[in-house]
Amino acid sequence: MHQMTLAEIARGLADKKFSSEELTKVLLARITQLDPQLNSFISLTEELALEQAKAADARRANGESGALLGAPIAHKDLFCTQGIRTSCGSKMLDNFKAPYDATVVAKLAAAGAVTLGKTNMDEFAMGSANESSWYGAVKNPWDLEHVPGGSSGGSAAAVAARLLPAATATDTGGSIRQPAAFTNLTGLKPTYGRVSRWGMIAYASSLDQGGPLARTAEDCAILLQGMAGFDQNDSTSIDEPVPDYSASLNTSLQGLRIGVPKEYFSAGLDPRIAELIHNSIKELQKLGAVIKDISLPNMQHAIPAYYVIAPAEASSNLSRFDGVRFGHRCEHPKDLIDLYKRSRGEGFGTEVQRRIMVGAYALSAGYYDAYYLKAQKIRRLVKNDFMAAFNEVDIILGPTTPNPAWKLGAKNSDPVAAYLEDVYTITANLAGLPGLSMPAGFVDGLPVGVQLLAPYFQEGRLLNVAHQYQLNTDWHTRTPTGF
Image 1 (cartoon, rainbow, N blue to C red):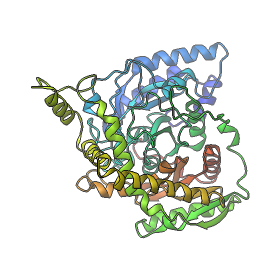
Image 2: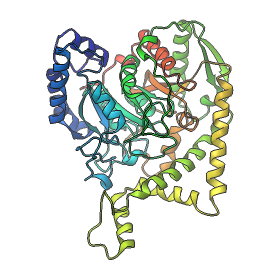
Image 3: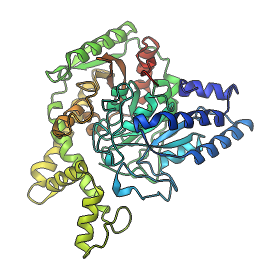
Image 4: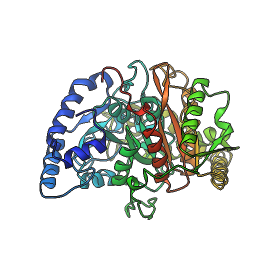
């Protein structure tokens, strides 16, 4: 059962080959047995899962149907879940039980999805390796000595290890696509505003976006269908009709124009990954796609712009965690200032403190124009580059990451080296575009991903290309040894 995709589970439940309750029990037992090796879960919600599974079985017995009805998933631990710990991977929120469900959680529950638990993550989604979590690092199931990518590494490791078929995740600068690449999964970052951020604890509000992590594009289409849609509670949610993502999966790629930016193949890219990307291009050409060389001239400025904007927004968003209203509070404070200082100093980890300090500096008087305002201008230039490119092509293709997953601890002493691993992913967040990573091969036994980017609200096109590619390749079917 654990080897089934979300689509196969939907068909099995519809054909009454097994019940949601049976499947849920199998997967909960598997998580209990195998997750100690991975540390991919922060909280298991066994009671809730069995309750939801029984309810889903009853709904099917009454004639209801739906791809997610009775399907087991997990949520990244920054989606608020009523009455269940929502920690954001931080000591600051270790004792926080959300009083309501995030819109994504509520929508998926209404569709009948079964929540098995909350997955581990970089603290407040700040990281590219899932090593900054207060609950310890997550291990990559392909090699337990390597990182699974971040910040959604818990969701990625759990799905890759076949502990469950799919999970929710979030992407601020590549945090869905990069772990997808590192663990041989398909991960989709939707257009900014396509998926509600209400109840999703914010890192950088103008960049954060929730999306699906699964083994196939078909599964991502199913999960995104349940997540997407306008939400009046979220002022950044866009009132745009949600298409049937599964309906367009089998559209022909004949004549599809794919742009390949020359900037993606610079000296920083591992040549073995470059070779795998070129192999992916050849596969898509066989399916009828037309390849065109393009340029994204301002890509070189994206990382410095991102690492001004994101920390600036983080310093503002995280100011609410002060030891007064909720979250960690220090013991026996001398006065209000001592309460603030020690509660934040004890509650936040090193990486979060670093980004808060950078952000506060960038927003301070005298430096706002020099750093934050300039970064926002670069953001517009990055967006303009994409708009010009999409006048010539339908899809942009390139590597998801410049290197395969690194060893645990290898970049801890050099945060900037870890930041540079986001070079291909952050531009989509700066521009608000949808992006997808899909499996493209292996380097030294570690998975590699190819990234696709599309114009706004063209998630269906990304899923279509990835699905057609996966019908003609088998990278996505490979399973890590021992799982």
